[in-house]
Length: 88
Image 1 (tube, one colour):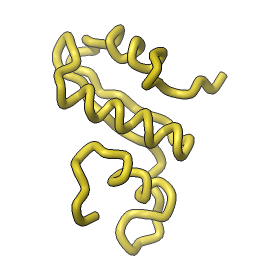
Image 2: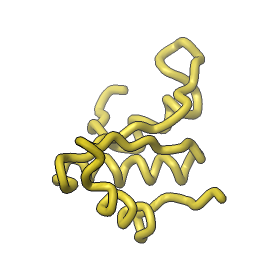
Image 3: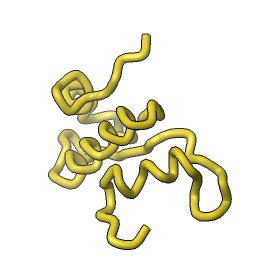
């Protein structure tokens, strides 16, 4: 999408709602990655965008963490004000 900032919900939401390119195939989840032992500025920005896209579409978020570290930071983000909707 022209003018998109990588990691912004404006870039990812159409892929979840109308499809990827002209294929009509919609993305099934939002995937983000964290850093090693902590979330750096880029990871925080993309996780905020993922949370916004999640709230707008209801799509689940998958998180890749280096060696499983940083999970508590991710949970704090998901339970905080910019966090994810609980489903269960």
